[in-house]
Image 1 (cartoon, rainbow over the protein chains, first blue to last red):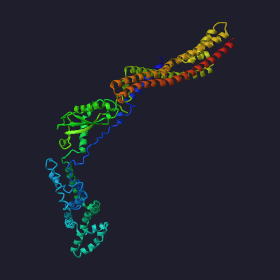
Image 2 (cartoon, rainbow over the protein chains, first blue to last red):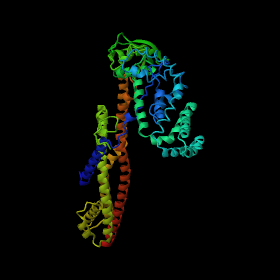
Image 3 (cartoon, rainbow over the protein chains, first blue to last red):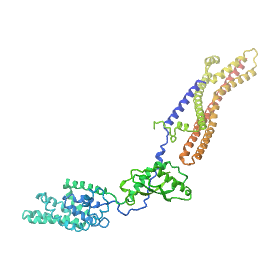
Image 4 (cartoon, chains in turn yellow, purple):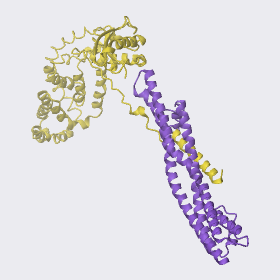
Amino acid sequence: MERAEKIGLGVAVAGHLVLFGLLSVGFLATPNPEKLKQQPVEVSLVTDVAKESTAPNPAEAAQSVAPEIGAPEEAAAPEPVEAPPEAKPEPAPAPPTPAPPKPQPKATPKPQPRPEPKPQPQPKPQPKPEPKPQPVAKPAPKPTPKPAPTPKPAPAKPAPAKPAPAKPVPAKPAPAKPATTSGGSGKPNATRPAASSAKPATPARGSGSSATAKAERPRGGRLGNDFLKGLGTEPSKSSNADAAPAAKMGAQQAANIGSAILRQVQPCANRQVTPGPGAERIRVAINLRLNRDGTLAARPRVVGHTGVDDDNSRYVDRVDDLAIATFVGCSPLKGLPEELYDVQNGWSNFTLRYKLPG
Amino acid sequence: MNPVFNMDAATLSPVALFLQADIVVKVVMAGLLLASIWSWAIIVSLVVRLGRTRKGMARFERDFWKADDIDAFHKKEAEGDLPSTRVLAAGISEWRRSTAGTAIDKAGTRERLATAMGAAAAGEVDRLSDRLNVLATVASASPFVGLFGTVWGIMRSFTGIAQAQNSSLAVVAPGIAEALFATAIGLFAAIPALIAYNRFNHAIGRIEAALNRFADGFHATLSRQLDGAR
């Protein structure tokens, strides 16, 4: 072997080693195919549309609106004033709306009572608040002007009169007032309540939040801390309302529990071998009778199929067996919500749709 | 670039593909890899040798036709390894043997000179093109060898389908990837070998032509000398 051949052999071996080493290290590695796999989107079809309210949901609307309008001007009085105008359009779908603040403090101290008694007290306050807001609205503006003039000194009054020109009506009386203030204190007092009462009157008439918002925005800059306090306290009440126990298990909870069960049986489902092409299109409606601790009270029953066609009809029995084996294999189901066990449509007797993975 | 040494079949790691393959496919792959290494060794050595030979021959001929004294030139170049040197040596030794006696057969001497130098040139060309047949064999045979490995590997993955009773791509794909890797190595060995074979064939043809031209020129010189020596 000549010298040139030795050189050539060394170069060739070294080149091959370098090339294959680079390939082994992943120089030309294809992007990880697992990223390209399409993750199946789990769509759970809800058969029962819940028309009933699944949890006592007292009037979040009135509370959520109240902080926006009620807090800014005066702490207590506007809240009843503003709430009723929104209660008027709503009463048909949500009867308990005006009641909310009163039943809530009662409901929370009770350790999850049967929700049925609640709707009963709710209709009772209904008739009461409806008459109330009207009397409340009238007295409300009257007390408001009295505290209002006390914090605001006399020189400050012409200042709000000037921004007031946004409203054409009060603008003209406003310049007229400072002239009269020197003369008699009775007349400006009489005119100011009239002007100030006109402002709360407008939201009562319009009953729309836009009118009230326009009326209060010019003042909003000066309100500051009181306004934020009103916002801060209100959402906590609404969160208490959400925590109330459920009367029935509705469609949303049923779908969540179905997903939770399917997640728990997924390891067992993955062990099942698909009996043949097309078998994964068969969806089995399987009925589970569960004990409170999550164990199966009875062997799961197949109550129906969908997705059976000519190709996979011969696999139906096998898919049934596999589905039952899946749920039996991972049977002690954990973490299902205790309070939804024996309510109406609860998960003590639960039917869900299952299909083979793949 | 991922520095992790990747043994996953999903990557293009040759080591992983090799280790997961069937024994027959492994043998095919190993053979093809050796063929590739060998052919590249030949390619590198031939590139070096042919380049050196061509440059040396060009310099040798230029110096030879400038030289006044052929004997002195021959002594100076005697230790060289060039084909031209050997052709020159064959011609000179035949000339000395033919002109050693008292009676000189001119026609016979010319014939012997031509034969001796032609034989020397042919021997040199043979020596240069000794390894070309390896390149030709690798270029023509390794695709078929790789194809054999591929066919074998695909047969194996189909039997795998039959055993698993599952035709999903996850069952078939690794085996076919391994199998196709055999063809890939075959082509990887064959393509450079084929290109190099054609290129070296051409280069050696040119060297042979240059040697023959030099031999003819030297033969003409000796023939003229033979006429003048009389």
